[in-house]
Length: 425
Length: 174
Image 1 (tube, rainbow over the protein chains, first blue to last red):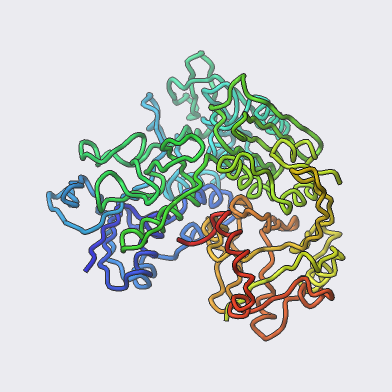
Image 2 (cartoon, each protein chain N blue to C red):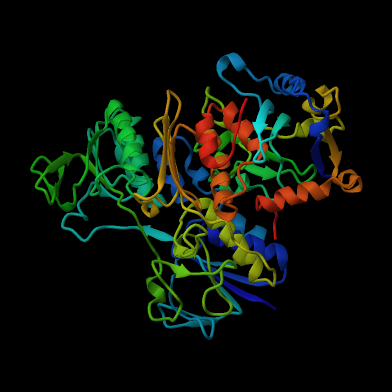
């Protein structure tokens, strides 16, 4: 009988359990979680704060009890795994006990990074990742006591916290250590437009601001002091500077690691029978040919299913992994596809702007390297697919249906040419 | 019994009767900014060899076997109907994040301006379950759009071309 352990129970862990159970009704599946909550999507926390969804909607698979019954799982809550012996496929726990398995999935996710600076523990200084974080922020905002907010980090979460404040008409300032918005995904030209839109909507912005400390003022307000000496004061500070993989328990285990657990296309680690999936892993990025942590919900679920299949004797692969960042906030859409940091002065640049779109793309002889598009939300999947195909088959061009679609959506012929197709209509 | 849409481009003249059927069936209010779930195209496309292809197409949700929009939705709005095989949805908890559009290689999901929620072609699931044709199929007088059972589709041999398309787009469950 196949004995499976799943460490961490978010989207990847749940999908692995579901797929494993679908393929092997008799398998023993033990799930270890460091909380007593059901699997939830961290992306939904800011939507809960905004009031767009009720509390229960953060748990798209249902409660732990429902999941336990539906999938016949042994779920151990508040029982974090503290060590792993991958050669012997054995887990260790804080009380010194151990448990051996045939297959192990590491799906421990990631946590919000807290910079090691004074003042991070002051009341009113928050991170945003977990259900608990969301509950605290929502409670503070709903109380009416927050008259101003400061968001540190123009990350994908940071911009959603800005939205949470803006929809309540709470004056908000966004600062970041980078030179411009969405620095890891946006060209400077794209960022300038994004920033202008935010400022037009009343959000104050400041960049090149490295956080040094947070202080409490005599009146109870909070002040973020940056290394440049600037001071930003607000009733509430949300620190959203990024995430770190939850892999500390794997230190010295022998499991291959970079920023996350390194896996192949089958989600296998360097040890047989030990897999990883979701925000804690680094899968193969087809653009760079290297392993990269691309922590998005879609990847977590797909990777979980692949691991679940392969832990039960199946043969599935996770493929077409590319860097994609999507920001949707305050009626504004921005997408970046590909690696902006891989672009250089030797590459060809395409730029277009009208009332509907802003497009900036970079390509070389081998295909498109990075695309930034503002205003293209409904077409993003098509653009992503064209991007992936341009990597896999640089000379293939765009299929006729996609050309028709792009024209119908108002994209210019010059953009279609840039992507590899031609139109004379 | 699972169903599939079959489109024969040789019989389509992009007359848009399918769109009319779709809009009527789904009460789509164009004046309010809503979009039809089905879309026709009438374009001349220059090919790589210098020739010109006159494209007459009718497209909507492809109801992929391993539909990526289902995994992309953070709140679990989308799922497969086990009876018809269509990709259906309940957008009660839809947050309008557009993750489904990001996952869809065909641009099928639409966003309703009035409430910001996702809507899309559900294959006229209720009609099909009750033995009727989807509205777009019923409106197509040229026979370019049909909806058949999987068994009928396989028997026709058309599945080979569709399989190649799904493989090229990495949409097949391995």
